[in-house]
Each structure stands twice: as C-alpha cells, then as structure tokens.
Image (cartoon, rainbow, N blue to C red; front, side, top):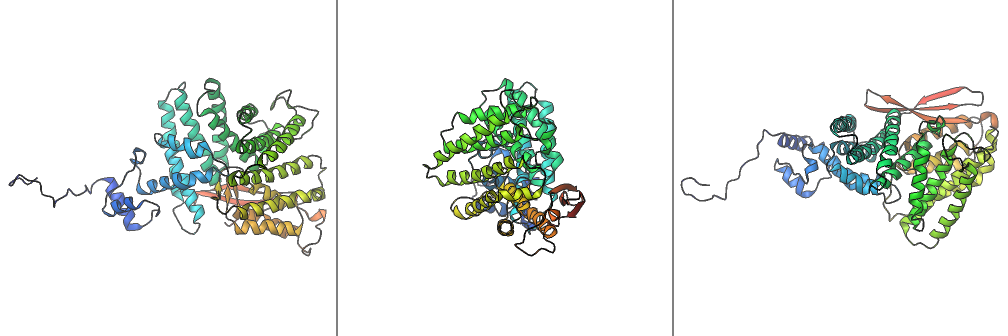
Length: 483
C-alpha cells in the first residue's frame, strides 16, 4: 500500500524471511546440489526463488532432503516393497498412517534413501542419513507410546504399522538384531491386539503383512530362529491368515497367496522334521499334523494351477510363476528331510533345480511391460536360486544361476544378488579346485553348509558381510565380502 497515494503498488512483493530454517535449507540444497532430482517442476521453480514448497501437512518440519526421499518412497519405493502382488499395506495403509505419524514418516524416508542408494550404488551419498531417519523414527515411537493409552486400539494400530516399517528398514539394512527385536515385539503385540479388534479394517492387512515378514525371515535364517519356539503365537496367526485368504480363494491373486502361506505353514509347523506320526503341540494344533498340511498344500496347488489356466492377467501370471518356483523348492525341501546327511543325495533333485532356474530366467525376461520389483521385502525367488546354486552340483545350472545374479541387480529383504555372487563363487572355487568344468564333484570336496553373516560396521554406519562355509571334516572358513 502506498502511504502517500493510498493505492496498491503492483511492483513490490514481500521478500522471504531469510532467517527461517526452511529458507536456509532450500538455499543450502540449491548450492550443494546434493538432494535427489525427483521433485516436481513447480517445486523446483519455487525453490529456485529461495522458497520452500510444502504439498501437505506431513511435510512440515522436514528438511528438503527428507521431503525428497519421502516423495521417492511414496512414488516408487512403496510399490517396490509390495513385490509381485498388490499390497494394501504398502500401497494404501502405510501412506495413510504416515500423514499423521512422524515415526512412520521417518522410517519411510529411511527406506526411500536405502532404495535410492541401492538403485545408484555409485552415487556416494551419505551413509548416515538412513540411520538418522531410523533413529528419529524410534524416538518418535517412544514418545508416542508414552503419550498414548495402552487400551487405545487406534494407537496400537499405528505402533504395529511403525513396527512393520522398522522391520523392513532393518531387513534392507542387514541389521539382524534389529529385525529380531522388532519382529518379536510386534508379533506379540499383534496377537494381543487382534483379540480385542478382530473386525478392525486394518486387522487382516496387518496380519497378512506380519505373516509375510515371518515367511521371509524364516527363509533368510534357514528356520534357525523358529527351532527354539521364539514365536509362540505365530502358528495361530498363520492359521487365521489362511482362514482370511480362503474366503476369497476363487480369485487368482488370493489363490496364489493361499498356496504360498500354506507352503510356509508346513515349513514352520516343525522345522526339525516332517514326521507324519508326531505332532508338535507347542507350535501347532493337535489335529493338524505335517502330513495333513502336505495334503492340503498339494491339493491347493492343483486348484490354483487350474484357476490360472483361465486367466489372462499378466500380473497374475507373473505372480503364479514366482509361486511355481516356491513350489519346486518345497518339493526339494520335503525330499531332503529323508536324506541321511550325504551331499550326493541332492543330485537326484536335479530336475527340480533345473526347473527353478529355467522358470527364473523366463520370469525375468517375459514380463517387460510390467514394473519390475527389484527392491522388495517379500519372499520372491532369490532365496530359491541361492539354494539351487549351493546344492545343485551341475556345472551348467550353476553357471546359469551366476549369470542371472550378475545380470539383474535385485534385493529381496535380506537377500541381495551382489552378496549371492560372492557366496556362490567362493563355494564354487572351493569345490571345483582341481576339477575340470562339467566333471562330477566328489563327496569329499562338497561344502555342506555356507551362508552370509551380517555384522554391524559402525565406522560406516551400515553392515558388513562375512561369507562362512564348512567342509566335510567340520573345518570352518570365512571371508569378508567387499561389496
């Protein structure tokens, strides 16, 4: 307003307050150029004028880098975490809760940063940023838990969502201790919460998400975490999940999930053995023996296969192909329970190993029009391929497995192709020393056990991997992975 003339002058605008934190962050980010180039054009124009563009209330108080990674998570990472199926948790629920929960928001930002780092391994970004976001998420979670009432179901629901996102972050980070801590606490809380809130809209979503996390963790730890009965509520939760999915078993996507959960319900029923004459009362139900689960599993496989013969959906067909890989590996595991301990006994399973590798090649080359979930938290096929590469001694199959891992950079929770290459190549060099390609590997040269151990690397705020393997005489060997 012009004081003397009493009219509005259009040529003057109020400059932004340069003392505010938002303006300083925007100016610093513009000067350093260190933030992701994934913001909208409108946002870039506003930031070029030293202003901060805030799309919604959930972005208030976040730095520019945090906003960028939050946008990246919502636009790209969440759909990657969903894997080969539509997932209401990763594609709906987590976004809703992150609007009002800073603990979920910061954990999601950390996952978005890990995704960007995995997609651009040579970007040389700050390793401490994802850890800081995880620390912020845990601090916000503690604050929320002290303020909320324990009997409030809505508050418990938010805690469970936060737990899932923190478990996912720990899986991608390779933090084994954090995965165990969050997964054990979250599973117990879910079991208690479901007793009083069985009809909550999010109850079935959270139940299925926790079961999927356990499926992946059981595969990644070779069932070792489940031998001692560390998850006494898991069998009941899996049973409820099967009942929930069975209500829509006529849908191809639900039928695929049903077989997958039944597959692992069988695995987790008795990790020590699958003796049909005995029932593990501490982990299952007295009427549900492993033999019953094997029968239901094979019956459901036939029904699911018949259902998918009539579908034309590329998404459903791809998900079913992933399931076929898991079914082949279940046949391998069921057959291996009768082995006496000799590594040459695995040779009779060569047709299953070859089928797994062929299906994996077809899966990766036949669905180019669909988005490829190369950064998923769900159990896919990397674990199955790694087992094929370790237990199948056929030279051609092993070379195909290595070729797949070298061509496709992927991560499924704890499984990573870069680490898998180092593990398999180390085992191959040890077993094939002095043996020409294509020749039979004798029992004395075979490695009965090999795995990747994750340890904290505090100097770089991430984890470092160690390849460990044992020969037939019981001697252990180790090698640090330089990924």
